[in-house]
Image (tube, rainbow, N blue to C red; front, top):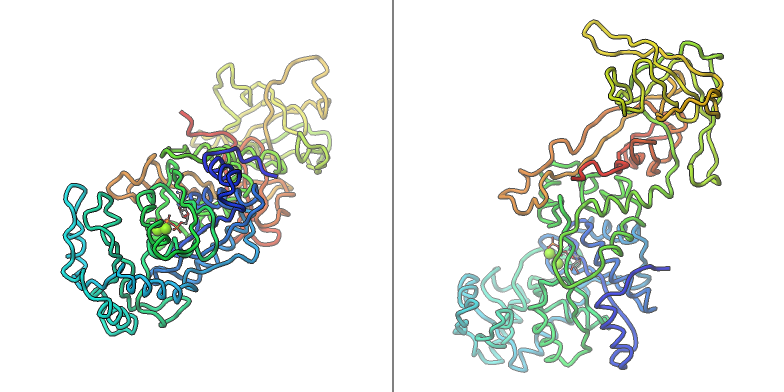
Length: 547
Ligand code: ATP
Ligand code: MG
Ligand code: MG
């Protein structure tokens, strides 16, 4: 079931179906395999696969692999893994643009024969300059009126590898004076002596995006080809090629891309972070990639919830990273077991515990009794969070202070009797007494205990590595800086240890739990092993960046 709210694209589709202009809905998600998918791609995936679900149509996964220089098989596999992880299924509809190279070539020949395409032998620089500007019309190439025969021959020789890179291109013959620069004889094919990850050395000419994309859509019977707004100006060209070729016409519809604060999404920049080892890889838990978010512990449902919540529109907007983090909290709050773990330990000795060990029980999820309980052993020596004690505490500090009482979560009330310091004056231990009648009960005399703190037994607890992740960038818009790397947050990763209750040793890699009062933590799927988890902080319980 989907909760996706309606949007302008659904209105278009509804009208198309109602008028009979279309009888089915076929969409596609067309990544270029030149990097890992990021949260921006998730918006497009949720939109395209979501529409297919809503209308009982289908969504193709198509690798737009027309640029051999940057593309790799590793990315092809990672992309499939990530789309599946998000919960979408393309069924049998997995396609590669490179499988259409023969067809695209044949269509280029068809356009040459129709006098609609020509081989231009100007230098790339001349072509660029002669395309003109917004205020100046373009200057037609001296090669524009080559005969069909000459064009056919040259294009074939381009294909046969007779010419070096950059010596010729194939251009569509449209209108060098068009106010839309995209229509000023756009390049259809370029020479590129480069090995392709799928077609090997078969080709040394490769189609440009504008000549490839619409035709790929057409071949696959796509009805609605949804892309981001920067392609709006390309739509006349998209339609022109399809009309000239007389093939099935999909409709291109543009929507506003996702812009997320404290994040970069350009694959070039993400690759740079990886290559320069500024992060630990594409799946570093700080990366905005889907594989990074998975490793961080973001559930796929949270990303889908986020995509639903931000909606689909036509105007560029910025979404604050906290919106995504709130979705993560919302989903994890429902699903995560509660556990106790202490990040900055302070030793507490309970001087009057009636036994060496008292069996307590803690609910696995306070709102979901069906998730059961676990056993917790209270011992005379425990650790509490250093921040839960203040020597000189204000009145409203409802945690531990000299002479004050607090409840130990799932156990009893203790009072701080004595503060022990080392020679440097640092507090190293608290000596406390417990009220043995407060296990599972309020104090008999009716005194109110306002605070509850978490704890871990010093005997039964264990120390485990913990990585405290924070935002990768400290600037709202790193793309605006001269060098986005200058905006990296130096505190985006703090490696430390936590004292955890024993049941936390049993979490499975990839499992997320709530460390009560602290945050959601996920056992790292790469570095954890049986009985020895390494925890990644997925998200804090509250937004600590809120203004
Ligand atoms: P880059 O320019 O960094 O290479 P891209 O947009 O070219 O990124 P593609 O692999 O071509 O990357 O993207 C696949 C699909 O994902 C495209 O249809 C594109 O519109 C969509 N997409 C990419 N980034 C975003 C984003 N930030 N918001 C919404 N959709 C996006
Ligand atoms: Mg791109
Ligand atoms: Mg692209």
